[in-house]
Image 1: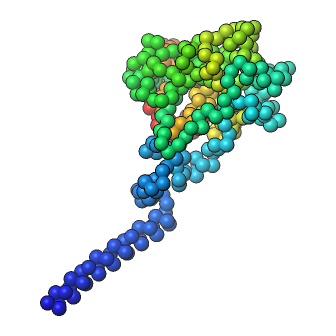
Image 2: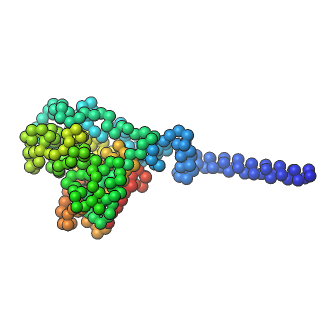
Length: 336
Ligand code: C5P
């Protein structure tokens, strides 16, 4: 009997020793090499179990132990939208912004901003509603021909926020691109009319663009920039937003390392989404399966070729977009 008891105790001791050794090994291993994703993930998620995470999605835009490439670039203190309060630009930003389209003799910037915010809302708090209970899903829909035949429509429409841009139509293309639009990104030369429920997000490239939107929503007195433009626009003026020139410069300098003359509408929209959403899905970016860079509503493969504008560095933009996907910050739906 004594012998049997001893053997039982010995077995219990061995099991205990094994557990202690294995646990110590696991922890020291994880600390030495934090790239061991499974262990890091398990520890991280159990953290979230006790103290809530940054958002309500399975994965959030910012994580506890984040990717260094991403954290070096992602700067939450630069707000994507312009308000009266943040409209004052540093000399550096103002000059960088003014030379984008080289407009001579611009009007007084602060007077123009003041008039603009007498027409549209000046809301400083928009999209700062991140929280552990919320999972804000966004679809950024670029204009690539790779959307044709994709049947992504229902998937795109299921997002909370759906961002489209420039001349993008939905009518007649619903199966592939969806029909809902919560935000339409444009500049005066690419403007189209919107319905009452959609937010117009204006990317201003010059002071005149801020004067144009003020005029297009009221008197209709401006009908030309460097080309003829719509003098009036159908849009809900309570839902007009202005892309901040300071954020524009941040996207160009930090995310594109100043490659290309300036970022494309698609890339600016993507970074806007990265800053206001928890989960970003990207559609309609890049070439189609035959290497064409046309728009999804055009049959002319050379028409509106985004890659050959000479203004954007399309390849670099696409590579940064792929890196964001690689770091699990966005999902790219590559189309056909
Ligand atoms: O041509 P447009 O600028 O209106 O297209 C909107 C955006 O969609 C572009 O700025 C670009 O980021 C993206 N795009 C793309 N590949 C294409 C066409 C457009 O990535 N073939």
